[in-house]
Image: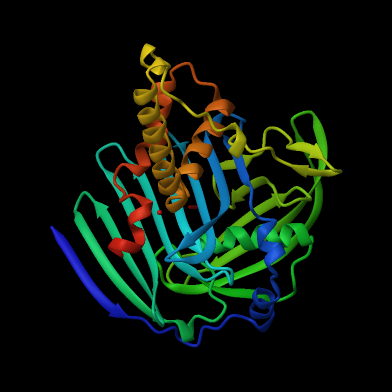
Length: 361
């Protein structure tokens, strides 16, 4: 059973505040470049039991020959004995506009799996939103189209994560800062930010200062959703919780102290990526064969490098997996890998987003 509807949505007198719009215009390239790092947290219950993992990474990228940022956020675990997860992969312009975003959320109930996918893409002067919900009763698809002229001050889930990092580094939130955003049903709503001030939190064996930001998404249909996020001075996420949720995401270990500031060392620095070369054989002593081998080797390296440059999300996925793996240190690596990559099984490869025009709490 499949239902499909297509609508032309125009916001009803919903506007972002002047302070919110001015904040976006005030963001400088260096502010965005300071967001280029990865966060990796553990989801725990009120009793401290580990429930899952949460990660966010931002890297520079290219989208249809336009320089931009690639954001990858991933959360998966088991809450109230129910497996669930969310994944976001998005290309964001240097003006924090969404070029393309894929948002996938799933909940595995006892007798069915609820799967929700939202694909957002900028097409000319419009923002096209495709929503697919798969439940036991069937599949429902919806398409909404928004004129870009009506979305001044719009912030998606992915650009929200970058805005939070910028605000955290500035350690201040402008008064009356309200953006436009989507609620859980992709209905245009308001998203308000306010400062929670500073407090101290134990991270590992250290008591550190953290700065808090509250974000509330008001929904016309459902009750509002509110999140409290606390950050280290350099913008790294220290904790995150949705009010009313039985779980909280926490940073377990402090990043390394470098140059007087807190910064994480990437697990996959460029000069640390292993290169697996062919084992030397006896034919190396044959000048002609060895020359052909070297030519072919350089050809493959160039081809692989080109592919990785065209698909920067590969590094994001592998970096997140390695971070989770080293954080959890599971006995069964294969089962851990299977659980980690399972949410991506029903998605199209991120590299095909802009070709096919087709996924966080």
